[in-house]
View (spheres, rainbow, N blue to C red):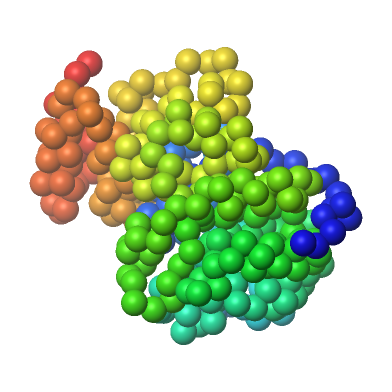
Length: 333
C-alpha cells in the first residue's frame, strides 16, 4: 500500500456531492440547460469530446454553453499529453469549472483511439497527461475511471492507479464501481454485466482520505445516494437522472442545503420556452431539445400524452415551442 500520508487535503472549490454523469449523445448543452432548470447545484458534465474533435473540428460548437449551466465540467477523451494540455487551455478559456479526463469508457471506438478505459493499464501515461493539463490550466483536472479492466481488477491494481495519478496532482477521482471488459461486451453490457463493487470505492476513500472520491454506477434513487454519501465525498447518477429528470428537483435540498422549494414540472416547461425560442432562431431543430424532456412527467398523470404529442409533432416543418405548450395540456395542472 502506498504511503497516503503525503497527500494534502483536497483543494477543489466546487461541490461534487451530487453529479449528473457525462453521457455520450445525451448530456449535450440542451440537456444540461434543462437539468439546470430543475437543480441549481448538481454538478453537470458534458458528453465526452475527443482532443481530435477540438483540435481539428469546429471547437466552438463543442465548447459553447449557456452561462446558467455552472457548475459544469468538460469531459475530454485523449492520451497525448501535449494535445490534452492544449485542449484544457481551450476549455478554461471558455470558462468551464473543471476538465475531466475519461479513463472509463470501454467502447471499441474509444479503444482504437487509445483513450478511455484501456488507459487504466497505463497509469504512468495517465499521470503524464494529468501533469501536462495541470501545468496548462488553473481549473481542477479530474479523472473518471473504472475499478479495473479485464483481469486487471485487483484492489491493489486500483490503488496503484489512483496513487500514480494522484502523484501527478489529481485530487478528485470519479470511480464507476464496475470493472470494464475491453472485448466481449457492448458498452451497454459494460454498464450492467460486471458486478458493482461499492466496497472497493469505499475502501479507496478509507485509504486515501485526503482525496475526493466520487462513486458512480447503479445509483437510481436519492435515498440510495444519501446512503452512499456516508462513505465517499460525492455520488454521480447517470441514466436514471436522464430518463426521470424531475428526480433532480429534490437534489438541492437534500445534498446542498438549499431552502427554496423546487419548481413544479409545469414551471420548468414555461422557463424552458424562451430558451427553445432562442435556439430555434439560432438554427437548432426542436427535436434537438425536446428529446431531453420526454421523461419530465415520468410517473405522473398525462405522461403518456405528453410524450406522444411531442414525439408525433416535433418533426413537422413548422414545429416550434407551441408543440411543447400543447403537450403540456395533457398533464395535470
